[in-house]
Image: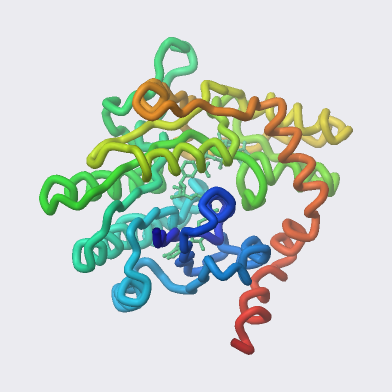
Length: 339
Ligand code: NAD
Ligand code: TYD
């Protein structure tokens, strides 16, 4: 099996590549990544010399580059993680989100149509459903909840999802979509809540909590998300959407306080800052469908996952310090200048 994983130098894509190479040693995994500010080739260091792995630096919007790769590799499956993924950046500069998240998805699917494919899988997000009110804990997102987006990021992901469903209905492209809740774990870029708070706390820097910190996210350990996608690409039904989440709702402020406690840092580092524009209140996934149809259940409890994650950031200080200093951007040149 040849699998192209786009966005594999980012947080979830890299964890997915490690998962595939571990579980399917005879598969060939090709990572296609543009190495934007969020892509970090040093993340893939441990697999760069694996004979079953290939890294290609390219933009998913670059039709020619994508077609050339398909001609060379004849992939059976494409899993699209490549995206602009940070809500705050989308509020500042929406256009690149439309370009990568929507146009890039179209280019990948056009190429899948042209060369033939067993499966195109779109990695989407629960943010396409908008948010839920804090005073209705009985409500959850199901696969039939209407799309109702809040940010340019979530709107671009919803646009991509609609396009994926259109390619299924119009052209019969064999697609699946997963919509997962917030992930956490190793290699999470330190602009997102959990890694930012860990890095800042370790550097005794202020911990910027938006608004009152009462917004709720439904946190899932990244490995559990990878296992869900693995099940969907192998056993999921073509044309279907699967919600992925582990019923683990937490308020932002409680996460930040927990990180302070685990690191032995004072809560006086917490600084309440101006709220995010259009800030979604609560996300909460109903994962009944993927559980009943594919037998998926989350395996990592939050207490264990956050402990593992904090330990990883303590043991891999260079990884995130190089990001903060900008040094990671030189890694590609170092790796590829003589190749
Ligand atoms: P990330 O920002 O850490 O990584 C994105 C990767 O995509 C980077 O390696 C980047 O270089 C690459 N990329 C960006 N634009 C590209 C382009 N035009 N061509 C090729 N590569 C490009 O993101 P992440 O958190 O790993 O998220 C991966 C996917 O999962 C995204 O589609 C995101 O919407 C989705 N998702 C994320 C979460 C979460 O909690 N992080 C939850 C649900 C869904
Ligand atoms: P984030 O990690 O950006 O994920 P998303 O917005 O996609 O859910 O943010 C998670 C929550 O944490 C969100 O409610 C915004 C909040 N947040 C802060 O309070 N401070 C921060 O510095 C960041 C990055 C996020």
